[in-house]
Length: 67
Image (cartoon, rainbow, N blue to C red; front, top):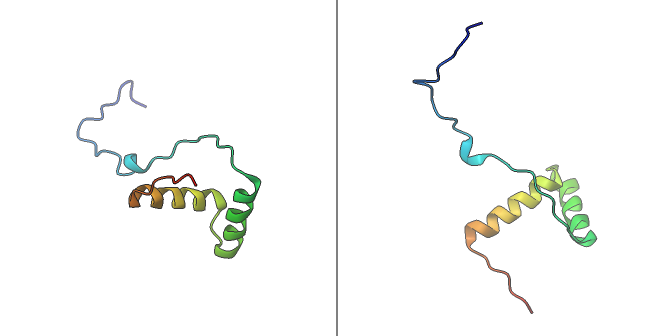
């Protein structure tokens, strides 16, 4: 092994913009049940489904409406 390494000329991480950060959310039991049922139907883990849904809402510029 070398004593020192240089990163000159190395390529940037192509996944850096898609990194995930763990967070804690308090979700209603009914909401979790819905996404778990969707996970069983689609074969996609429910956490991924929640992330996909929230990402879609952000991409479409949806806003919360209080009734």
